[in-house]
Length: 239
Length: 239
DNA sequence: TTGACAAAGATTGTGAACAATTGTCACTTG
DNA sequence: CAAGTGACAATTGTTCACAATCTTTGTCAA
Image 1: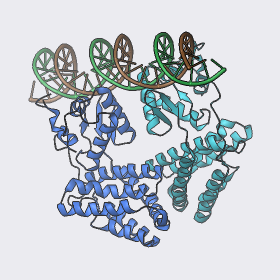
Image 2: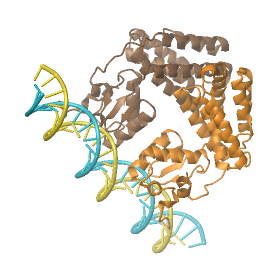
Image 3: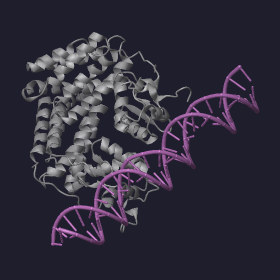
Image 4: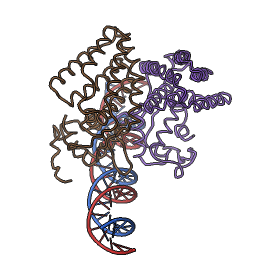
């Protein structure tokens, strides 16, 4: 349609990059996480086919998977749209995180002896680097990923999956209701939380995390809403 | 194939019952929850098509959804098999439940004022009735559903989904490693937990729940494994 | 008898054509 | 001029046929 002749806006055209539905899911997932895909953006099958250079079947499988994760919403005969959490859902997400993350951090702090925290240490370094370079999308993504990796550190597949879903949804919410500048996670709270875990200061770790979540939630005002902005193929095409 | 001429083993042939993939997912989900579908059972597309009287597309969509929930495993070019959790996964499931359910029950007990517990009260009644009538599959399913409804009582969609996944997986695990008779949940522990919640006895509620989970986990021995048994079409066909 | 190898059968994966639904735009009509 | 109506275009849903892969069966030789 219109002038969209090349799917070259993707890093690599199509043949030499992975083209299964898992790849598509990851790309869209990442785009949502980095707030490059605004809520309510329509994901038409045709465009995705061109963008990723795959058949409709793959795209439809990917969309079905994404909808089962709650990242997009499938409307019958109307198409797929990036999920657009409302106030109520936002509340639920933070309530769920308040329920899960404190005990999670407690657990990490208590049994950190036999748990590998190097991933988290490295992660903090990445965050600092991104913040220094002022790379917006990178900062946003890493801010979310910290919490995901926190869950991953438990080595528990299910806890990881739950946190991943909650963090993703949080990213959507922050993008929708977040007051501009305050990207997502304030400054170096992540670093302090990790330190508390490392020093096995259970209470402090839990307290810091709770404050952290409150800060994020506090930085929201339920008025703003931002529409779709950039070209879709470009967003999904870039790495 | 062979002699399977009628999909009449289903309650109703096909036309007058729901035939979208959601229905198929629910049927298989329920069958797994009630331990009528043994782990590792193969779910061939053709059989499911006949059983539910739908096209292959619906079946494939359903299988994809089920696999994304972790209920079945899709093997490339080999088909779909009911998930077969191993010892490690079993450990993770209980660890995750130990992490989530105690704070969940605490929350319910603390703020039970404005929370509707009638669903849970009714549920206990159902459990008692099923136990009295000695309806095995019903007892198993209701035992799991209690925990799901506990999560549902929070009114939080995400907490509900998480618990649902964990409970389902637990059912698979109990079916695999459970020592025979000890169906799943001992006696009236559910009832006691609910009472503690109703009386806002937070500590007791949490303690009872922890004991309860330990009882379930304690009733497992990591030796047994039971193979598929009944006819597949019959299992899925019955309500 | 047992092992490997090959062919046949069955099952899943893929792509294309067809059908159904929805949204849009021009046109008519009060 | 506004509102309603009808046809057209675009998009999604479905079915079908075919290709790729795996499993089984049968055969032959050691």
